[in-house]
Image (cartoon, rainbow, N blue to C red):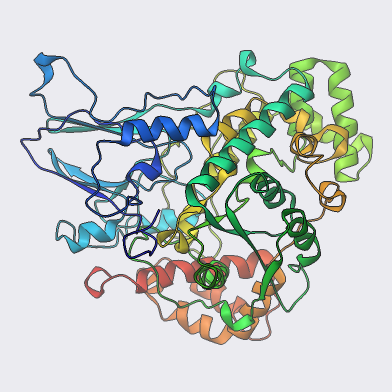
Length: 557
């Protein structure tokens, strides 16, 4: 929706709490209902119950959500004067939920900048948290980079009652990998995956009407495109290329744009577009946005402005929900779940998928069968001061597996928890909705029901998704196994800016606070140093953190 001026409405909301607190129990579960997309800023909240049920019905008529979409829920008369607020965040994490509550006072908001401007929050960097943020960049936790600010994780509820504030987990991915929920046949699995993806894409498309589809030409964005074909939305297909090999996928993207009957729009990123020092939105509570994300963000924002798009659509998260594991875990699951015959067949699929011998695939599968790794995010202490202790993040609520959880399920649920950082690296989502339909709750649930070994059937990754949309995709995309990469582009940008990056980090706030391994950084940032891809990508992630710090108010650094 848009404002009366015709411009996209800003996605922000804030609730201020004060004691004594007299609020009806509230459940906020559907992001767009309280995301600021009302016709004007004074739109009443009274219609949200009906809107929530309408959106759920549009996604899938028979879908039964894990919550009751109620706002202003009636309570027993004896409890009417008990102050209580309940905020439920949907599992996809589409709506940010930031809060600071102490003794019944505080605020809950989707944009920390609102609280700052209202004078109820003064920004300050949590330097005690920064070592953990740098060592575990892929981990989403309740803690943020700002002092006193916490985030409600997807699938959890925040309950404020009297002076107490507690968090409760209300959704778990483990529910959907349970034996009684598993799909028994590939045909059954493909049918539900296709239905859930189509309904999620079409529901968002019919709501937004005008869409900029970020069409890479890969399988995931092409599946989203195929579903948009059957909607009434106006779709602009946009593709980004680079002047160096690796990321030019316009040939594949054009095939899919032709299916939609629209031309492919494209832009070539310049190496100077990938900057390491740039403005960060005030809404950013964690140091996540790096040089590549900034370059892509600016290009997509310009395209959306030029084509009058109301929202962005992306296939982001597809690799995760479609179980694109790069290990032998799927074959190990087949042995545990279906026995020797199914297990041996899965090992054959694994060897075909990774183009290795059957014996190597067998050895790797056996290793997975014998090991039970703990579910936790791995630390990356590269370029961090080795003398500085780093506390591991608190356990993520999704990384608490039931007894005898299958290794493939463990790996894909770790990956699923990792997708919770996706929206933080997309600043453009603060101007227009960023739709990631493949991470919509019904899609995630449908895909979790598919055993990991089904996803590698026939030696193809994401096999069930390919089967589900076999009649909707061009043959070259359906059978494509390669993936584009921006690594070469980022490498060129790094080499062009190596000297400036050296000064940026070695004269910055991270060094001042004793967080960096200065000697190793100096050696790697020398002009003649040859670096592996992972090394310069890590350096740029440190630049992202330094840049975030420099964007904070001067008093906070």
